[in-house]
Image 1: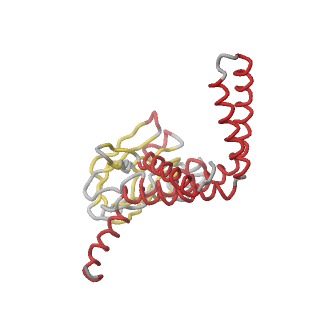
Image 2: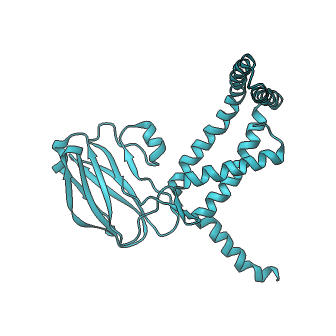
Image 3: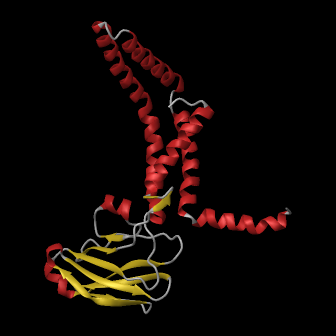
Length: 269
C-alpha cells in the first residue's frame, strides 16, 4: 500500500478520532493517565512513599501472622493507622497538584462532551427564572429568523419561571434576547449535528455554579432575570452495550491508564 492510497484511510481515522466522543474520551484518558502519574512522581517524595508503603505491608503481614496474639494485633493496628497517616501526608500535596488541573480540564471538556447540541427541527425548551414572580407576565423573547416558537409560553409562578418551546430551521449559533421589565439579556443556543461546545445556562450570580455549568458571562447584578437555561440533551456514550456519562468513562479509563504507566515507569503512588 502506497502513502497516497493510505491517505483516505488516515483522513477517515482522523475524522473519527476528533468527532467520536468515545474516541476522544479514550485518547484523553490515556494522555491524562500518563500526565497524572508523571506529575505525581515529580512532585512527591518517592523514597519516603516507598518506605511508608513497605512499613504498612509489614504491619499488615504481622496482623495475619500473629492473629492469635492480641497484644501484637492491637499494636500492629496502631502502627497501621500511624503509617496510613504518614502516607496520606506524603501524598496529599502531590494529589492536590494532580486533582486541581484535572478538575479544571474536566469542566472544560464537559462543555463538549456532557451534552449534545440542539438538532435542527427538534423542539427544545428555554426557561427563564425571575427574581420576582410578579414580573412573569412582563417577559418576552426576541427570536432570530431561524428560530420559531412552537407553543405558547408556560408560566410557573411557584418556581418564578417562564418556559418556551422553540425549534430551529437551520444549524448555527444563535442569540435569543430575553426582554424583562424593559431590560434585554441574551442567551446563546447552538444548533448542530456534530460535536459542539454548549453552555446550558446563563446565571446572574452563583459564581461556583457558573464556573462548572456556564461558559457565558454573568447576567447583570440588577437584572430581574436570575437564570436563562436551554435543555440541551444529555450525552451518554455507549460502550459494550451500556450507556454511560463520559465522566465515568474518563475516570475508569484514566485510572487504568495511570495504573499501567505507574508500573511501566516504576513510580510509587
